[in-house]
Image (tube, rainbow, N blue to C red):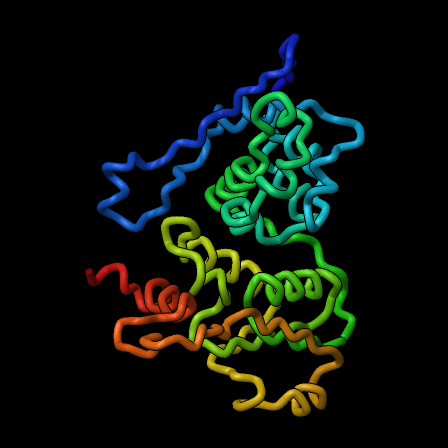
Length: 277
């Protein structure tokens, strides 16, 4: 049931604080720092939105999410509609709500930010994605199969986005990942306290439910060649990422205990090195 919106007579320039683990608690664990909005907090934050006609926040969003539309739905208490609006443009809201640089994109364009705090668009996206995970994920409507086969090399953010969009368009998608875990930089480059692996896994499972096939331990160029993919697939997307480190060529960089950022993050995230001080 929709809740009537009572707009304040003057704009509210103070954002709803995001609940977080206390510093003295989180220093003893690697769990997610952000605890997420409650429904009441999300509605209060959403009601700060001015509902701008030109919606500059949308121009700041790389995928063009109807931000005023989903924020208005949250303000009205219509959470199912809110997640539906987001998923018209983005099928990975639980990930994007946590790791997208909103402060430099959509929130940077928010009119409220000129005199106070912009609407916490990222926090609201995280809230509505987590709400859906608890209430039950509904898969989007997909176009009837086209019979086309798409190969996506790399399961990082770019590859997953392409896989999701192509699946929506009715294509048969196969994602190839060189490592044993899916997610690319999302899984090896972002720590657990910012993006829990369980949440990423659920987003991947939703793509699998849409018909996306995932093949791990497939190093394209070695396990299989691009030419072989061309023989099997109608189109190929190469989302190779930025996994190759660059070294400075200085004395000592090859000593034991000296790691590139890539190796350090991989050891910590994929191998759970943070559990072994």
